[in-house]
Image (cartoon, rainbow, N blue to C red; front, side, top):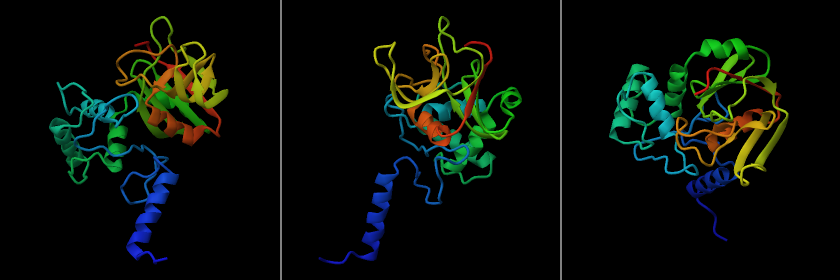
Length: 247
């Protein structure tokens, strides 16, 4: 058997690691992990939120850019085109990053922190020991807190007018990584964390835009985001706080 060259060995090892731990590396090459604070996989020109099964977080990126007064008057389309790239470059210059036009994890970290809304209300509820999620129904925003420190934030959607996500604070009481709904045609609910009478945080196989449509009461997340929350908290006590006017 022929010996592998040093370069080929490195390539094979990298491939094996990628297959063993999908979704943990981002291509940044600096040890960044999806368990880090304000983590997102990088997005770049040409990426597209093609379906609920293929989300590149472009829609979220566009909403967050709008929240920091970029892309004003432009709809969130889910496609990373020239307008989005220019806005990313402008934001990168604003925060002292290299204006590459690629939404790197450093770009995401700064953007997420600057585009959150009404954090004081969340902090009052989630300022305690352990892990907490604060869901603001009006702002479609779920923030994750660890020992009173903001850890991450996601754009989500909640229940419809006749099935609102109920207000209150409840600890997660049941978890199921591969849950399917027993009430709604066996709809997949991946990475479910149930916190109040059948209502759960879970990945949605129907949500493209957090401001379009509603759930039956659960807090819908992009599947990648629900997986991210699961990896951080599924072995921990997690308290979910629901508040804010229904939207």
